[in-house]
Length: 129
Image 1 (cartoon, one colour):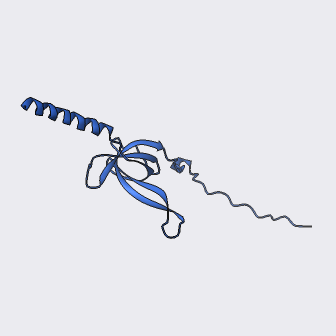
Image 2 (spheres, helix red, strand yellow):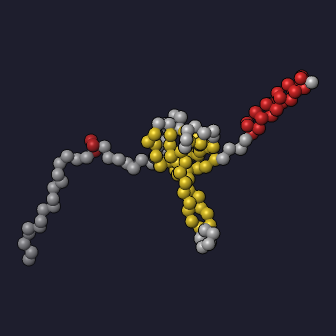
Image 3 (cartoon, one colour):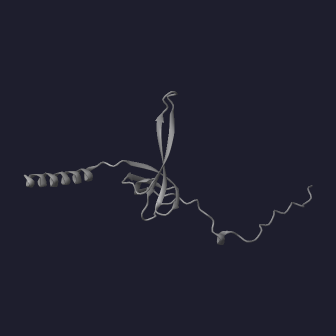
């Protein structure tokens, strides 16, 4: 009888582990709006829904805190996040992949800026006939 309960307990634990492996975790795709914290990014997810009263399509936005172990994201990147166990008071998501990297704004380097003042065009002093 004790052997049966041990076997059932083992089977139950194995079944729970299999269930945990097969759990379909929620995924969201959004834009990184902040990377100011260590190993944490803030992802803004935008979704389009129909307004209940006015029947017009409106955009709803929500921010999620996600764990970025390698610190590979930059502001403006499109990322995919997946649901995970709670890592802190606000973090319940982790970075799955960077879908599209942001394009830099083409910042000007100090060496590229000319030091001289450009010459003003000379007024035409020629006499008209």
